[in-house]
View 1 (cartoon, rainbow, N blue to C red):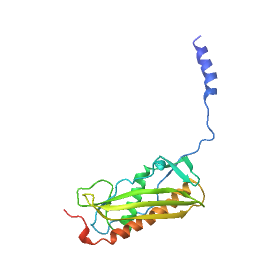
View 2 (view 1 turned 90 degrees about the vertical axis):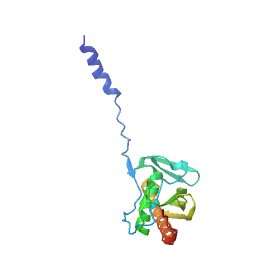
View 3 (view 1 turned 180 degrees about the vertical axis):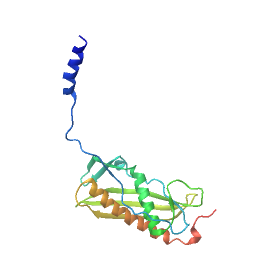
View 4 (view 1 turned 60 degrees about the vertical axis):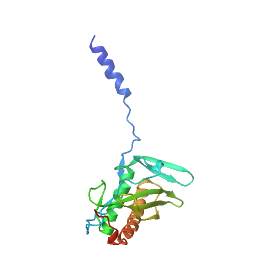
Amino acid sequence: MKTLPWLLAVLVLPGCIVFDKKSEAVSFHRFEAAEGAPTKAQPLIHVPRATLPASVRRPAVVLLAPGSQVLIDDAHRWTASLDRLVAETIARHLTREAGCPTVAETPDAPHFTLILECERFEVVSERRAALTIRYRLERADGSAVAGGTSACVEPMADLAAPAFVAAQSRNLTKVGRAIAETVRALPASQFPSR
């Protein structure tokens, strides 16, 4: 009698198991940026998380396309939070291009803070990725030392997450170069000190 429930369970349960043959493997993305070692000690630059439009702050890659179209690709995700990835990528470009050390956490040493405000992170007409970032270098007291806006557009191979990530990587390279140029133009007398 005890074997009857087991026998029924063995016969019924396999019909409940569903294998989803449409499931895709998940790909993880980050922006490309070559590492660079600092070539000088000053100025130390603290690069906190970037401010991003709310619509793209998700684990999945979001493509904001023309015509108010929003494409969320759950099969393509970021390796970390997007605000951190943008900041880390720009920090790597800044170190490589300007030679100055960068940190993600607030340091005890005298430093500048680089404020990054991303105003545009989307797809525009004709399959192009657009990125607009306003940046500001501040002293510890919050006073601005320098700043600017960098607006970039790069072509995409197709309207897909990998092409968008590649195009935005190229855009972030341009932004990093623009910020590095701003930092290189600062006279040493403006560098923070104790």
